[in-house]
Every structure is written in C-alpha cells, then in structure tokens.
Image (cartoon, rainbow, N blue to C red; front, top):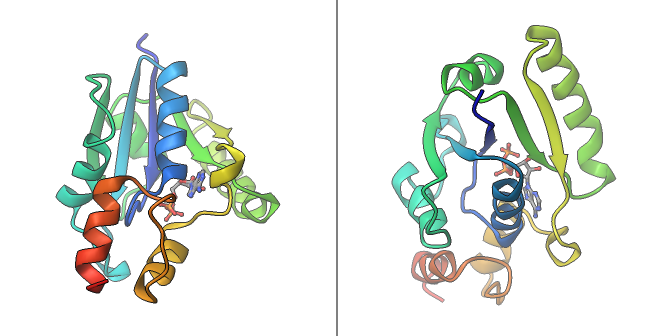
Length: 160
Ligand code: ADP
C-alpha cells in the first residue's frame, strides 16, 4: 500500500505555515497531495493555478501533487485520490475544537481514513492567509510570512 497523505485547505494564499506543514509531511509520507479548495462562495483572491504555482515555486518534488476540490466530502475525496491519511495543521488551542469535531465526524463517515495533526515551527504559528492579506492590504510588511512569489503577488494586488 502506498503511503499517501492529503493536505486539504484553501491556501488563499499559502503562507510559510502551510509550506512548513508540507515540508514536514513530505518527510513522513511517500506522496503528498495538496487539495486546494476552490469554493467560489469564498471568492478567493487567487485562482487554483496561482495557488498551485505558489507551492510549486517552493518545492522541486515529484512526490508532491495538486488537486482542486469543491463541495465534496473530504473522506470520499481522499479515498478517490488514494490517500489514507488527512493532514491538518494545528497552530494553537483555538484550532483544536473545530479540528477535533471535524476529525470525529470524518471518522464517523469512514473509519479507515485517519487524520493526523502537525504543528508548524513556532514562528509561523500565528499566521493565517486571512491575517496576511489584511496586513498586506494595509501596507504592512509580510515578506517574512509568505513565500517570495506570494509576497510579489500580494504587492501587485494591493499596489504596495
Ligand atoms: P481552511 O479553509 O481549511 O482553514 P487554510 O488554508 O486556512 O484552509 O488551512 C489549511 C490547513 O493548514 C488547515 O489544517 C490549517 O489549520 C493549516 N494552517 C493554516 N495556517 C497554518 C499555519 N500558520 N501553520 C500551520 N498550519 C496552518
């Protein structure tokens, strides 16, 4: 059985926290699939292709692949792409309640798909895509919080 994990999220855009989690996942799994949520209701700032490219600029790694997903049960989707493990990042206790609830719900739906949690380096544990966008929109320096390609795109987007 291949050792495949799926890392789902919106990644709009990926921060250094997301990159950190992918890096850790690649040490643990033979293959990692980043599943990018393209829910149009969330009106993302960046397209699927842009978000995928941001990751690809950081990793030269054949074991990493990308899929888009929308309005699908994560456990069914994971099985469809051959992943037995769902990876989620845990930043702080504030993430825990929701993540525990989701994990138990997913387990209820499918006992065979396991969820594991990884913690990022401490310096990334305060980062979220939305706070990075907010700070960038106000002209704050987010260069140490996101990959350089994301930083360039944010500068362009907000004309800063
Ligand atoms: P979602 O819409 O699922 O919350 P996100 O793109 O915000 O999508 O996050 C995707 C995953 O990455 C989630 O498991 C989230 O907890 C995790 N994550 C988000 N930011 C960080 C960070 N700074 N460090 C580690 N994990 C993170």
